[in-house]
Length: 83
Image (tube, rainbow, N blue to C red; front, side, top):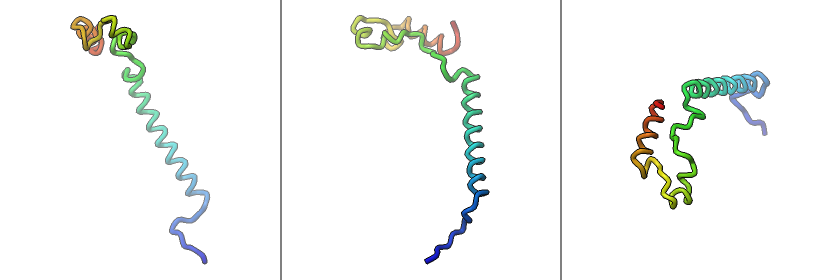
């Protein structure tokens, strides 16, 4: 028994799908590049050393923005792009 399809199974349709996905990939890459140029990727805004957030750092009382007002002020300045 033969079946009918509204889409012909030919090569040009497959190429159209491939170029459409290339366009999507290019659009995604453009957006990622824009974000990188704006500094949204790869820029650490919290100057607190990662060790301060570990169990050892917390039990030693190392300052974090959540537990120390000076560290909070420093993190706020850093997040606003101020030294």
